[in-house]
Length: 118
Length: 222
Figure (tube, rainbow over the protein chains, first blue to last red):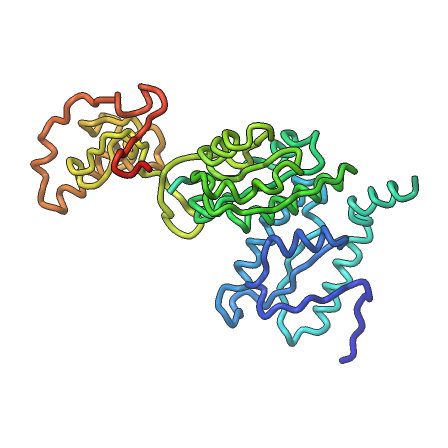
C-alpha cells in the first residue's frame, strides 16, 4: 500500500499491548512525548485473549494520573486496529497528530522552554 | 496482610511542596502484594511526582528505593548510607513502616504516601476485603471461622440483629450480613447448635482500648 503517516509518530514495538505498563506510559511523557497512543489488536482478537483489554484499563489508569499531575489525560489514547488495517493505522496516526497539535506541546516542555529562555 | 491504597497525588504534592530532593521508599512486604507501595508503585509515583513538579516548574530529584520490609529494623538500615543527602522521605509502606522510619531517622522528615486501610485478603485480582480488626481475642472457633467483630458492621457477638435482610446488612446493602454468613457456615458444618451458645461480653482490654499494644517473647529476645 505504501501509505504515509506523520513523521512525528515514533513507534515502540511490544509483543502484545498486554505488555503495556502504566510506568512505560508515564516515562514516555517524562522523556518529552507530547502525546502517546497505544495501538492494540481488535477487541476479541487478542492472541493472548485479554492483552488488549488489560492494556485499555492501564491506559485509563494512566490517563487519570496524567490528569492529576496536570499533563492532561487527553494526551493519551488507546486505539484498536488489526494488522491488516493499514489505512486505519494512517487515519489514527493523523487523528492523534491533529489532536496533539491542537493541544500544543506537553506542558512540561513549555515550562522548560520558558526556563531556558530566561 | 495489611492493605493500603495510594493517597491522592495532590495531597502528596502538598506534603512535599517545599522539598527538591527526596527519597521515595517502598516496602516489599504487604503493600507490594496489594499493589499500594511496592517497587512498581514507587516507580509510578516517582514518575507522576516528577511530571507534576516539572509542570509546576519546580523540578524534584527522587531517589527510588524499595526496602525489604519497613517494619523490621535491619531493613531500615538499607538507606542509612545516603539518607542525610536528602531533605525528606516519602514512604509508601503501611503506617507501621512510616512510623518505624520516623523513629529510626529522627532528623529527616517522613511523609506517608499511602493510607493504611485494614488487615485483609486478596478477594480477587484487584479486589481486597477486610477480615480482621486485630482485637487480640480471636473467636473464630465459635463462629465457623467467620469473624463477627470484623464482618458484622456492629461487631455483634450474638447476632444477627434486626437489620439483617436477605443476607445483607442494613448498614450497607452491598455488604453481606456477617451473622448470616456465620449461620450458613455453621449449618454447612452441621454445628448449628453453636448458634445457641451465648458469647459473653467482649473483653476489649486486648484490643485498642488500653492504648498501643506490645508482645514480649523472652525466649526470642537476644
